Image 1: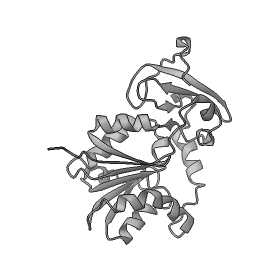
Image 2: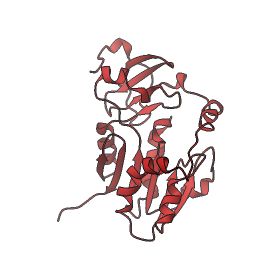
Image 3: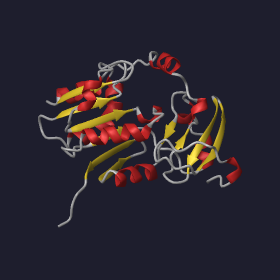
Length: 229
């Protein structure tokens, strides 16, 4: 359900599509912050005034215990890794964007014969990796943290522009009604500030001329556009 009360319109543009038609969607209590809903691309996002600073954000990430030897974590990442692997020729060169404090997906690709670089603004901040061409790009549990998703998605697609390789994303897609969103635990993480839906992903695919594969509620793969003769 959309809130169509124009008096609740914020003076803040959507960070993904830059539309200024963004309405107050929900006022949270834990944490205390507002959520805005873009009427154009269906992104739900947290206004900048409620976002954590980089230091506060990193303190939370430092507590994550993502370990390459953790089979449960590997199984979780496998929901993206398995379908993406079938799309790659060997050997392929890829990038795991937002690899975190315990890079794991890059190791899983390497075990399959691929080369996979890593980038993370806190833990592997080598910006030279962002100026190359790749056969695939992955970003798991990353895009929900982005204050500037328009810029980041543009960059991720540019990295595979020449190869038209897959861009794989893992993030939980937000419910389509406000009541379910109110009860949705994923929105309560203070580092989660951007929430996408299947509608949002479809618009992204169209904008960047890609086909779209959505698997379940948290795996999205953008693939090369199939042309009909």
